[in-house]
Image 1: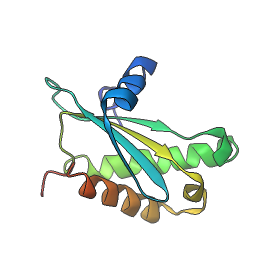
Image 2: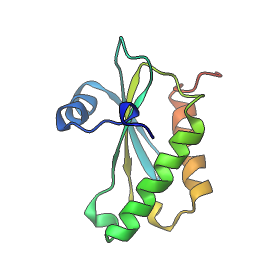
Image 3: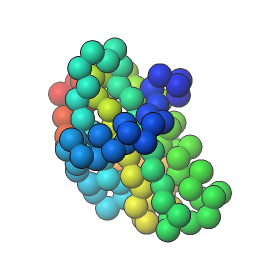
Length: 114
């Protein structure tokens, strides 16, 4: 993903946690907040140390980034989206993570084609 699609600053993460809405399933938690004036969505990832070692955490982040990349044309754009991985995500394949992410985005009406 290009840099303009990423949330990097701690203040942006904290704003999404405090002012945003959240929704979760067994594998992922999503926080999202509408940001007027943005030309595209931005996403941030959080995978805690309780999930596993660095290799496992980086694999989960890689899968989530790729899922966002494949869904980027369908995601509604003036949003900041923060994804937090839960424990069951470490046993999931890419297709399962993408399906779980799509489910969350669909439930919270963050996809354009609804």
